[in-house]
Length: 299
Image (tube, rainbow, N blue to C red):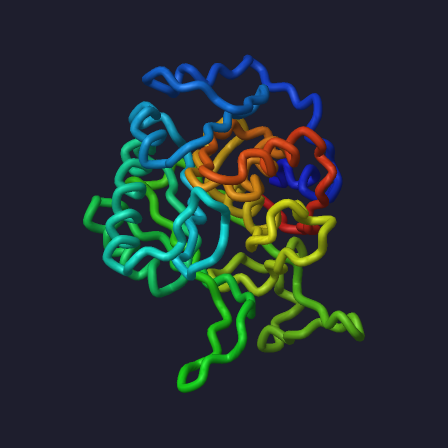
């Protein structure tokens, strides 16, 4: 059965006026006296260090955690973010926020971490120590750097997918049959069994070759030059692992892509960011950033 997919086709859907029923009260998920810098009928944004905000989120209240932390590459995110930790410091920091996020997840909730393979090897092992169930190591095929002498050309980011026990929600996704962008012909012959293929597309694999980099300004804020994630990636994660009305937590809000997608797809969200809340607020209030086209079929 096709569900909800029509809403991810419009690349310019406004975020204004989205209504949820019944009204959502973020205070039911927070223990402690902390005021948000922004909230909508769908979600709430807190400004601060995630290690100070996460402990205030009640245990076992979240359906999905999506985290895209700084990669510790020495990038300049602003005066409040230190992206030049020692390896030991970065790993200790990572395990602290992962532990807090895992506490907030419901049994059956999903946990996605987007990072370099170098770090996700360690963080994946830690999630296993915490008792999580490994689902997938998803390779996001994006060439975003120059070749490195003496090494293979790095061309993918890692997206870890774990669940807290058996996942409550896992929705099957099909992607369109790939075609040549020049001639329009199909790229594969599927071993001579093309006629037996499902007309709705092929099963989504754990190698995603169709996630575009966010380069054009119509897709991202000019206030934030750091890398930003495609709405297509977040839409896919949200559709795969949640239902309408579920609650998504992102402890590293960044450019606000997670929250933008949640607003558009009728999911509630709790966001945290240390540096770029102004960018997130502007994005959600204006609704003027475009979506990357997404023709996924969600069963």
